Figure 1 (cartoon, rainbow, N blue to C red):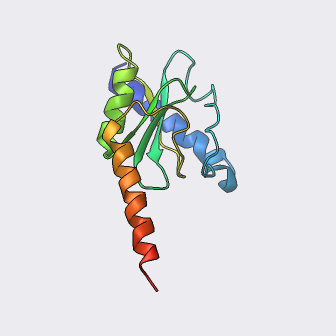
Figure 2: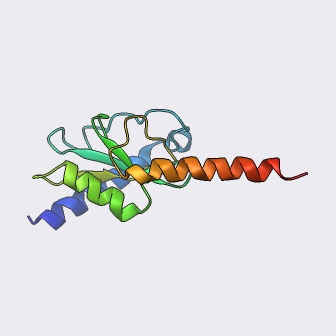
Length: 131
């Protein structure tokens, strides 16, 4: 069995498991930590990362146990980060349907924090200037 076949099988299992959940359980509320991954879907021996967007639209990569995570401008950067953090093995990537926030220190792109702060400041200044 090739690595690609293993990854395809893992993604199919994740999709199957997600389809069994109730609709209200599919979206993680903003600020709520992501729950553990079902052991029937991903083995404890395989590092797993959640990859998704936060409420600002930035990409978030967070290891399933909260050991490492980061913010990124591009989806591909978040995936590359997850793969680098799990070397020499590959990792399972889980893409939640809802938004979630990085609840640990940002080990991703350090400029994202500055850019996000600037964006918030500009948004506040813009809304104050409106009648």
